[in-house]
Amino acid sequence: MAVKTLTYGTLTCQQAEGLAAPHCFTTRLGGVSRGHLQSLNIGIHRGDDWENVLKNYEILGNLLGFDPKNAVLSTQTHSDIVRVAGLPEAGAGLYAPELSPCDGLITNTPGLALVVFTADCTPILLWDEKTGAVGAVHAGWRGTAARIGEKAVQAMAKAFGSNPRDIHAAIGPNIGACCFETDEDVPAAMRAALGGEAEPFIRSAGSKYYVDLKGINARILKEAGVGQVEVSSLCTHCDETLFWSHRRTGSLRGSQGAAIVAGEVER
Image (cartoon, rainbow, N blue to C red):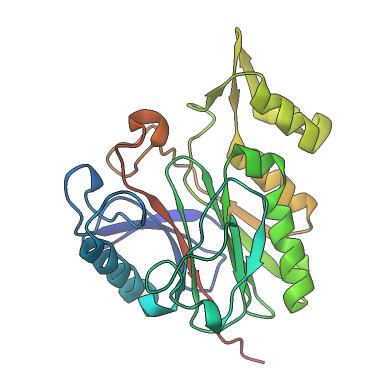
């Protein structure tokens, strides 16, 4: 199983073979935004024309089969908070106020689309093959160290009765170990979260370090009992054609992200 890059007309995205729920990790290609936001900006606080943002969500909805009025967005704060979304939350962020601050969303409501946005942080999508429940997680390095991926799996078990072995996870494009240069605080946080298991994902380079956030999140998900974890090989910092990167351009950027739609499960 792999996370593959696919093109639909002008839209380029990544999808995981093991996730049967409609989903994708978006790139910057395929939308209508202009200038430094060109073109599939899904960030709602990037200074984009609101009509362009809504059109971009319409394009994404057409690809995945959801109505943007059923999308759920939250205020992301690099936390480890996971919230359950249902019909009352439909449209949050686009047609109603964003959900209260959180960096993880889960639902088992058919037709509801969970969306997180990124520009170097790690997007994680979850799908339970037995219950049809799904999750979307924004894992910055602080959220990674707080094991937000594991907390999303635990929240699905508590809310929907999900067995972690039935959950398929996909980790999307982020700033890779090739480019994520840090000071000592990031490795220290990862060691606190994983102990010695963090060492294969940390490389020292003089007074600096390079940290593999995809690898660490995959390890955390496997420790949480997730049955299958697929990982994108793409780096948001390396590929300026496909991705915005906060580290590369600062706040002058749009946002790509990840979306997944809950569906009915045949029994």
